[in-house]
Image 1 (cartoon, rainbow, N blue to C red):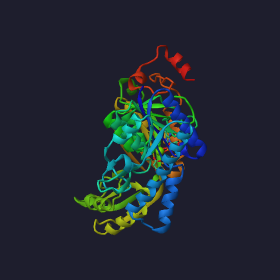
Image 2 (image 1 turned 180 degrees about the horizontal axis):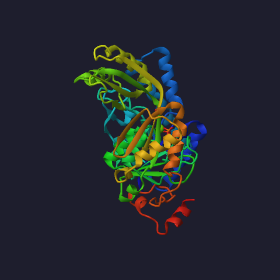
Image 3 (image 1 turned 135 degrees about the vertical axis):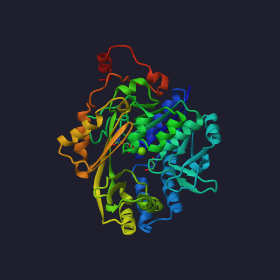
Image 4 (image 1 turned 90 degrees about the vertical axis):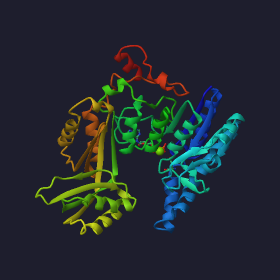
Length: 441
Ligand code: ADP
Ligand code: ASP
Ligand code: MG
């Protein structure tokens, strides 16, 4: 008997029939003898609808009130799921973030979890109930409702699993697991049996929304095994776990893209100390998070170009701010382009393999895709390109790095629920690589 946290995303609770499906899955896990804490998202599209309502009233809604509005989406889901489980003859109790006491800081719309009081959830389990917790929301020390950023139910689930010492945090979604690329964009994308926290963190932060970035960070810090799987099938998904030696043999594990950024170039800016500090200081003051930054070498000894990217929703605001400081930093021109996308390759094997970046550049060149910016870290290479080329770029890179073929290092997961623990997932089934590959098919 184990304690399992299961999180169901918006699509998985998108209508009444799907909520019944989730209820049956939860009851199935209870029947197998496990304690279950369920975390649910708002029904598909609900958070966007609520955002739209708020923006219909105020261009820049007060963030306290916005969180009060957004948190209602998850509150509806927990109540409906609780009813559906009760209809099956099992005990269930719903909890909002405030009722659990998921304590956060005061950063409305991006709050960080400070602590989780497990008392009420444990009492529910003790009473034989399924505890159903609203994702995405918390409460401050002053009892103000907060939300945890888009996709934040993943974070609620992982943090809940950490606080309860759960055996596994199962993230149920609308795809079979973490793939080598977004399966909705690349038909040949392959489900990964396992991926390291580091790689998942990069993929998530570079645009693969299958897990929220902060949830992966949290899972890594507290060593929570995360099992990403489909709520529409019984097959095993992807286990996100600590890196091991076998993972290094795979050079590129996945491709991510983000088509939701804009690029700003400050041309022929004075090449002297303090310019970048002034420029990015002004941007930071507006709470804009800058992503890539590239500064050219000075061509004439006195001026240089600085380019950087920001989230698309902040693009126009940032362009205005930069135009405002252009004269002060001696810039000749400020240029903007919001039709860009960033494609990235990610893999821990890059630490020990050379020539990976050049293979990426060659693949893009073969497709006649121009690279506008490049940035690298130990386990990723990112290129900014024209937005219209993004599909072609992701598919070409997927092909170039042979991601459709399973690498020999991967071992399949057992297909039974409950999800495997880290140890069973790492254990390799005997047999040749070919036999393993055959089993996967
Ligand atoms: P949920 O509502 O369950 O939280 P999300 O829409 O947030 O689901 O995340 C699942 C989606 O993530 C998939 O439908 C898929 O399009 C997208 N995705 C992007 N990159 C990947 C990837 N590498 N592997 C799997 N899914 C991915
Ligand atoms: N409902 C929230 C969102 O749409 C949180 C989540 O789904 O994880 O972002
Ligand atoms: Mg999500």
